[in-house]
Image (cartoon, rainbow, N blue to C red; front, side):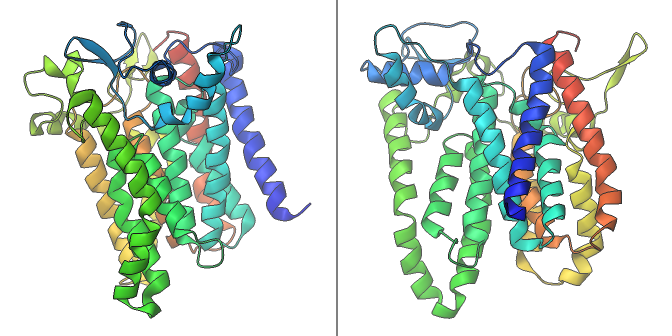
Length: 404
């Protein structure tokens, strides 16, 4: 068995083990029915010839438009679930794959994080460590444990962002520009604001084609973009058919936002939400109490952020005028700023789940700039990984058991 295969097995095993720990204490096993299954309900409705889901499920976040009830999230996962919805149309068959799919996505995220890290980090042990740091040593772990509609969308966006970055970053036969752009379009069908990382993809593709000249690059880019454009047109068609607007996927019509004085997005929310990025847990009856709504300090529950900041400060002079090294933190900050314009920073959850969206690009930046001695990195990041792993295991369990 090659070293790479051993590390793939290690990464997948640790991700499954971490989730099994949570399953054991919460009872949220992958084979259990998902009651927060908006994407499956939408896929089944499509197969029955309707765009709305027909019924107001009060426990789901549904858009109310022209007296009908629609799923209020971008549609990619319903497209992904269509084969399973088709199986459910057969007599005496009912499958509920959401939780299991969430776990598979987590494993694929670990694999592609490792593959992406190896593009820049030639030490396989180090690359595997950072991949586990990303996938089980931070708040992403919370999102992988169920197929709930809110969490599986972020889980999918996380995975596809890593895949998009990987296929753009490779400079050999595995670099696949069309696939990279297509996966980024998949991301935007889950978490639209993750599209802010398109400049990274475009620059990586241009850097590999620089010798051919800019005009040739643009011609090739138009061809590479065709699959992504096709998927984007599917999104726009669905949006227009449902809401009469190619850019509207339904969130605007949630009662929570239609009844809000300042709407879904507003500068009014900015100061409060920035504070939520950094607020520490409080104390309740002598014990630490993490917030179950609107988030807690994102760098505490995803401490890979601290490793990124440390390595950035150490490495910025050595990397000099490298464009991506300077662009990545700007995009990360812009993404956080956009998230903070939203009315909330996430409903019921452990940690600060909206900020998990920035972690794949942050991980990419970390892999590119981490050139420290081969062993000293472990002494800096290992305690942080242990902190993130422990907090997210315990916090997820306590949340599901009702203690937060």
